[in-house]
Length: 316
Image (cartoon, rainbow, N blue to C red; front, top):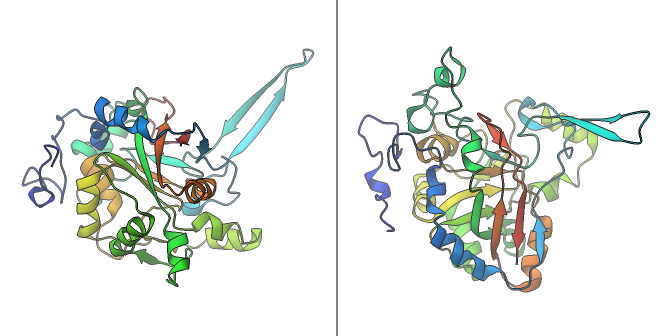
């Protein structure tokens, strides 16, 4: 399987955290599963471009007045530079209050307290702190390749499957596979997985006061991808990055004593995209009857950063 160890062979080192693949690409690697986006994989993805139609997946940075998880809302100041007719501006925001890629400094193995390839909090915050595992490592080549949308929200409505985005609940793997089959979507090694759960569509129907109230629930109650070894195996065998339209990608709080975040980010170095705006993308996929496309995403080149807006386009 593309030279990768089998999922059953993880962790690679017996004393490392569950399912981890530390050292697969070297002890100092900071790209993780982005190593799967080889020049050959990216070149093949160009065949997804047929018309040149471009769709942004970036939610506005100020889309949330009351982000979940107690995060700071976006704030902008436009500075008038008198006496000239000139303006500057300043932005202040939490990189995870709108569309984002979670980087490898975000969520460690909670029991072991270690990030990807064994990086510790002291490596990030201590006296000898460095920029190790910072998101700048992804800026050199970007996150680029063939994307596939699994439009779970449309599928579940067509099949009368209950789903409540603002309640703790799971999207099982069998449903994700059923979506791919219904769409006729072929999954290829190195793909960028994007799941439309319907979170943003449901959020758009709620009023300001209700959203503020929901944001104060601690921990947030969110439906998302199920925590299961079957899901992990599926991701390990197929994808270079995963993303969705809700705040945590996975079901929150976790229904297990572990999180997908731990294994994906800190075990494999797999980027997790959250709060992607997938409404126009879903419309375009239905219009052309194709749920695969070329993806180009360039994270902000901020040394040592934890996360970044994705600056992402789907190209058909």
